Structure formats: structure tokens, C-alpha cells
Amino acid sequence: MLRPHPAVLRRLVDDYESALAGAPADGTPSPRARDLAYTLCVSTGTRDVRLALEAARHWLAAAPAPDHPTPVAVGD
Image (tube, rainbow, N blue to C red; front, side, top):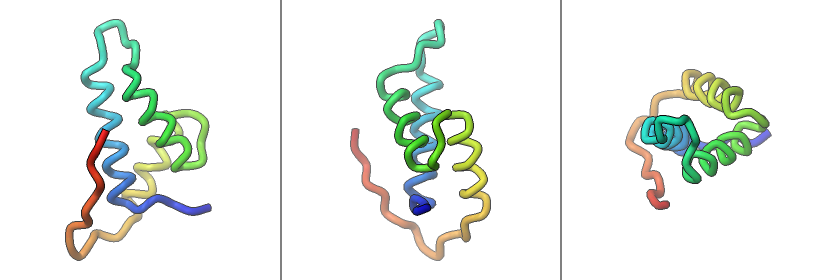
């Protein structure tokens, strides 16, 4: 299975966590959070965002530290 670049994966996790932090008090995820959850699941080969986050964190922990900053596309 292909794995996303660690910088891209880190950005997905960070953006997802930020989207959840800005969610309404009733816990309803925003469309952005749902889109990021879907992308995390596709990127990690899972069907549940909790498993996707677990896999992403595991992969990120095992990834070598970059020698130089890697540019990551920014956009919504």
C-alpha cells in the first residue's frame, strides 16, 4: 500500500484536530472535519477516523525526521 508523505499526513492530522476543536458545542462535525476525516481514512486505508488517526500517528512516529523543511500545499 502506498503511504502519504509524512509532511502531508502531519498536515491532515493537524487540520483535522483543528477542525474538531472549532466544532459546535453539540459535537456536530463541520463539513471540513468530515472531508478531512474521509481523506485521512483514504490515506491510511481505514474506514474509521479513529483508526485512521491511530495509523497516521503510528506512521508519523516511525518516519525519519526530515533533513530540511518539506513544502506542503496549503489550500481549502
